[in-house]
Amino acid sequence: MRIDFHASSDYTLGVEWELALVDRRSRDLRNDASHLFARTRTRLPHPERLHQELLRNTVELVTGVCDTVGEAMTDLRATLAPVLDACDDLDLDLFGAGTHPFASWIGQQLSAGHRYEELIDRTQWWGRQMLIWGVHVHVGMPHRDRVLPVLSSLLNYYPHLQALSASSPIWAGLDTGYASNRALMFQQLPTAGLPFQFETWAEFESFAHDQLTTGVIDVLSEIRWDLRPAPHIGTLENRVCDGVSSLDDLAAITALMHCLVVDLDTRLAAGETLPTMPPWHVQENKWRSARYGLDAIVILDAASTERLVTDDLTDLLTRLEPTAERLGCAAELASVSRLVARGASYQRQREVATATDGDLVAVVDSVVRELRASV
Image: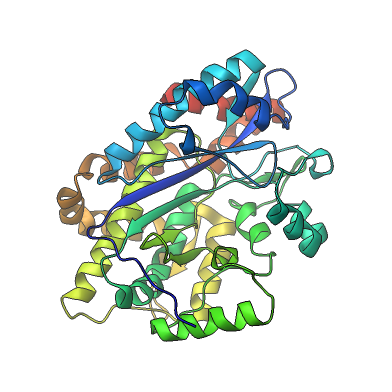
C-alpha cells in the first residue's frame, strides 16, 4: 500500500497535553469531561483545541501549528485559562501526571465513540487498566525519506526523555518502585510500545499493509508506538513522555524534543549517517529509565557504552545549544537543567508521600498546585 507523507515546509511544532479531572475534596478522578466541555466551549478562542480522550475523566489540550516552543506554550495557556475557570465552576482540578496514585479503574467511564468501545472490547483487562496520561509532541519533517532514520536515531535518547518526564511512581495506592509505571502499562496494548526500526518508507508501508490486512488495525492512527510517523500532517510524533504537571516543565521537555529532532534531521540532510542502537539496547534503556528515572545508568551506543543518564543529559544540552538558538528556544532548553536540579515529578511525588506518612491525597494536592502555579 502507499502512504503519502505530507511533508512540512519547516520544523513546525505541535503539542498535545493530556490532563486528568480530579474532585476538589476527595481528589479522586471524576468522569465529568462532558460537563467541562459544555461549560468551556463558548469561552475558548479555539474550541477545537480541547479534545475528549478514551475516558471521561480526561481532557486533552492541543496547540495549533506553531513555529517555536514559546508560541506553543502561549497557545496552551489560551486554552488552559478558560478550562481552569470552568473547573472552578464544577469543583474540579486538573491533574498532570502519568498516573493517579490511588484511583480505581473500575468506576471509570468510556467517552462516547465506537472507536473507544472497540479498543476496550479487544484489549479487555489491559485496556480497562489504562488510567494513564501523557504528552505528545509533533515536529514537522521536511522530507519523507528522512523520517524513519531520524526516528531510529531518536530512540538513543528515549531514556533521557522518559527519565525527565517520569511522573507515575504510585499505582492503586502502592509505590511501584518505578519512576514511570505508565510506560510499562501502556506497552501492554497490542500496537503500543517501542517502534520497529525500519530503514525505508517502503518497509513501513509494507508493515502497515500487513496490519490492515490482518485486522490488527483499522486505521493508521491505531499504531500507538512511543515514536511514530504522522503522515497526514507531516510530522514525527514523540509519545514517550509521562503526563506533565506544569507549563514550565512542559516547555523544557518540548524544547528538548524539538531540538533533538531538528539536530538529527539536519545532520542526516548534510550526509551524516545517524547513530543507532540494536533493539535490545533500546528495550533495556526503556526499562531502566522507567525503573530508575534520573538515576538510570543507560546504554549510549552499539558498543554498549554506559553512563548515568543525567551526566549524558548535561553534555547533550550543551551540544544542542546552537540548535536551540536557531529554533528560538534557548531559554526553554536551559530550563531542563533546572528540572533535573529540582527533581522530576516522580521524585517530588515521593517526597510528598514520605513527608505526609503516605497521604496520597496530599500527593494529588501537590501535583494540582504545580499546575495552578505555572499558569
